[in-house]
Length: 187
Image 1: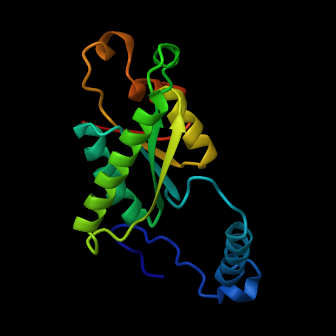
Image 2: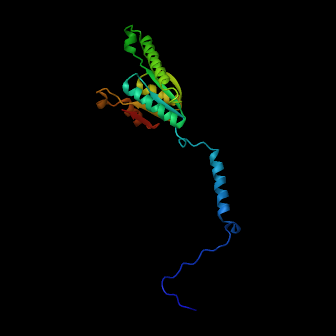
Image 3: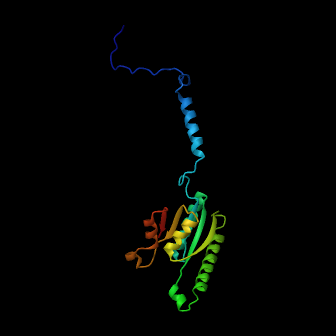
């Protein structure tokens, strides 16, 4: 026997066929494939991106920017874009005889016209399935109701531009604090 000088070699791995042992690669692959097939038949919430992207619009510049952002998100995810306008319910105005429902209907119709015009301008650029919905109430509760009823996976809103919201809290902050959906706030 000739003595070896230098480092000792690590023993070589066995060259036996792995499938012959019963615990080799082919058995492992079969087990993984079987687990994958079982998993493929179960629905797992939130794994494939949003299926319904809800965006709140009120005609403000930030809400229209939020709608454009949400349209891009919906296009990339092949999701439905749910454009929601929350019609304010003004009990005090109704008590004074103001035609509240007529006014909010006019605003909703104007928003629909704006959104349709914008959709026509970018037709072909954004192939997005979208729906327009109106819900009554204050903006926060209206968006929460809309998100629940439409089974929204993501909510997009524009940042509030009102000074008082810095102290009290905006709709966006309240939606984030609710923690029920991913919320994107567009400036």
